[in-house]
Figure (cartoon, rainbow, N blue to C red):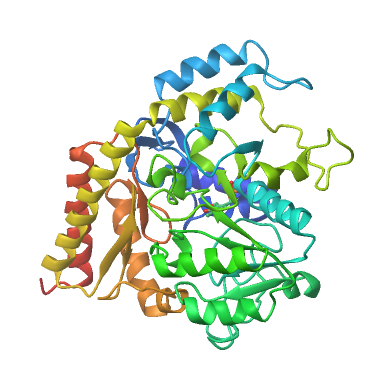
Length: 437
Ligand SMILES: Cc1ncc(COP(=O)(O)O)c(C=O)c1O
């Protein structure tokens, strides 16, 4: 009789105690998940002893890969001094100082524990500041699990409605209708339609939530005219512009907002700024963030969080972000550009109708000749999904970890060697899909 692998056996135990056998659906793969034994730099070895190059980096959260010696040393030294207190720590203050100096729109900030919490806090701050109930967001964009932030994240052709009036589609069954009614869905990269929709709700909108390089919308950049239109509209109508940089902060020293000609009111952060530990942060205009200040009477937005700004996360995050300086950002982005160019070359050689999108230290492969520009364009149908799944399987079998949309993110320990390997394996995978070339 065939013997079960260690991972298969572990998954059987997992299914007995956790719904779906896990705490986050992200780790699932067929026929069972793989389980990590250890990670070092840009490599992860699983419990079967297979080593893979990690282009998933815990869904874009590990900018220096795994177990970076400087982060490990700093965290170890903090661990022996305590991990969480009901009093403040100096490292929280130092880290806040470091982050507010990274981006001109960060006048003040507060730490939280996840990207979901950061986006939720931005939305609550915007409501508290403006006294208005609604938010607007781009159809298809992922901003975490808060009821309002997840509206229309998975909208599909059967329920997304017309382009001029996109429907507010729930993700979770049981989402209250009132939450759906309080979210106005706008089409990504379509300034004219977006402004028309916003105008119809102008007195009720607390803010517009936007990701400038949304992974779920094809990893395609927000066009400058779309961003400019939203900035102008929010300024004219007393609403706030909230930028979700939970992933995209890694794209530039000051985040994806840096190259654009605007300054948002609020920014949500997470992932990379935890240095490998759970984290989130809300940054932005000091006068807006006053809603969280309880010193002059009850705060308009009372804000707590048992593990917020715990010294382990603060230590790891501040070491990680100090190491991700201008030179490191530049080096990583140049290497990533080589990866995107190499993948584009592999696509050309293979003759497969495909393309690569992305920016900063990220890329995503699409099975269509022209890069999409909107969510409805980027929507993955069954045929494209079959190609994506087969390429993902090929990557996995050949020693790569990728994000499930066929997206990859780089980490600073990567070198030209890993990029060359990525491009070779991409070409082999594409040739399997189009065996004529
Ligand atoms: C753009 C964006 N916003 C928010 C989140 C939520 O972050 P977290 O998973 O830390 O709650 C994510 C997570 O993938 C994200 O990609």
